Image (tube, rainbow, N blue to C red):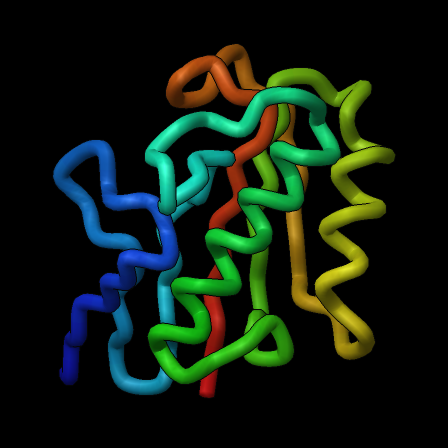
Length: 126
């Protein structure tokens, strides 16, 4: 098994004992991203739209560091603070994919790190 830790300053640094992503053979497991602006290390919480955009941009940065893009994503998990946010998050999330959409589940949870509304993780393959 070939295991490689992926890390980029273009996405938020981990806030715990985990890696931004781990590549094993041809699979990339990207940790859940929350709306932290990596340039300022500040939360983006002006609106759910801005939160979701920041989350997707953080995922994009990690994917790019691994030499991949959203076209490589095969599975996503979306965590929401409230299912009433689904339509807004889904619209922005969907704009990052053009076809051959990944498998996905979306769940509402009691709480997310730092009190954010959106966290998304992905699995990608070469």
